[in-house]
Amino acid sequence: MKEVIRKHVGKPYRHNGRNLNGLDCLGLVVSFLRDNNIYLPDDDGKFIPEDWYKDDPERFINGLKQYGKKVEINDRQPLDVVVFSFKGIPKHAGVMISRSRFIHARRGKKVAVIRLKHYKKFFHSLWRIRGE
Image (cartoon, rainbow, N blue to C red):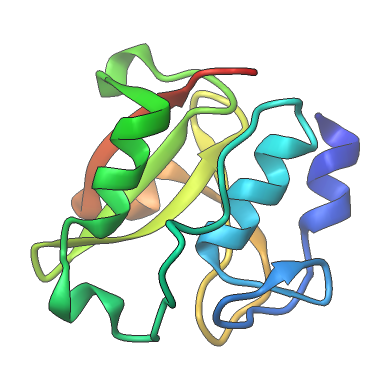
């Protein structure tokens, strides 16, 4: 997993970014999981505007429900998808790389690894994606 982390850290943020030239949080989750042999589609077949959450705040969660199962925070493990809620809307995600750290892509920043405790107040849910 260390090689996959190095491959992604430092890549620039880009809305709808789906390759290493630029990634948004979904693009990072998809790329990171695929590099660890777990498949998650990179969209739901519909255009993803920057403010997608205004029309369908549950869009991301509904997609995760199709490919994974929700797990309790105390049962977290590497490669679980962690979702964060801002103003009551689950609209940011990353991938756990240990029990205490996750990797994510944030608007205006480069892909980085951060401690979960820094985002604890925004925690929404945790998902274990089924492998192929």
